[in-house]
Amino acid sequence: MKAIIITPFLLYPIRKIISPEEADLIICADSAYIKAQKENITPHAVIGDFDHGEQGEPQGKFEKLLRFSSVKDDTDTMLCVKYALNRGADEILIIGGIGGRLDHTFANLQTLAYIHDHGAAGKISDGDHDIFLISSSLTLRKGNYDYASVFAYDSVCKDISLKGFKYEGENLELQSNFPLGVSNEITAEHAEIRVGEGRLLVILAKKEKIS
Image 1 (cartoon, rainbow, N blue to C red):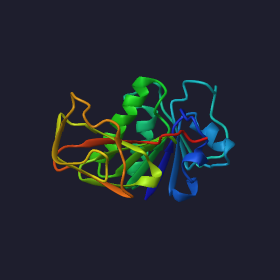
Image 2 (cartoon, rainbow, N blue to C red):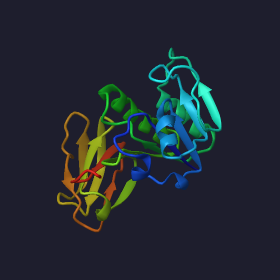
Image 3 (cartoon, rainbow, N blue to C red):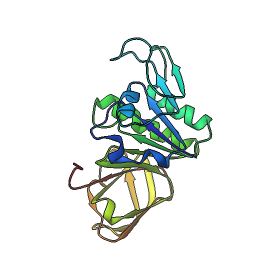
């Protein structure tokens, strides 16, 4: 089951990034439901503490509202992820959530690791980037991206293979304290990243921002 989590920090319209009709479950984190409603997207659930912006009870079209205290351990996005996993989602796409406050951006990258470690496929997409965490392989199409950066999410990642890039390699090793894998270029129609040990953070970027 595919779940989409829409976050409050978005630089582009939701439909510029993804077609909501592709999802089995649409969840809005906190005030993101306002942006969804502006695009005539009806979420199945709206989840958050609602401690910023709108006052009072959130209003609008949605099937379920889950309100939490602002004194909590989970971010609103993490609450949405846990809800999606409990509903049986095995694919979770987080829309937005990067490029605003740095602490929230980093928290969302860690949330991507939580999704991965709980057996689901996760991705963050903001219209300019797609971000994955992998522990096996990932195949990319050149038409969708121009650059791919690969970082060690764990302290050491071993047996890394890069094919279809300007800088290729076999049996590579990356460490979390040195950004050796930044800004590689995709040259083949289909490029492949493989890792034998550890978790890789893969960030895909376009040369031009979407309009």
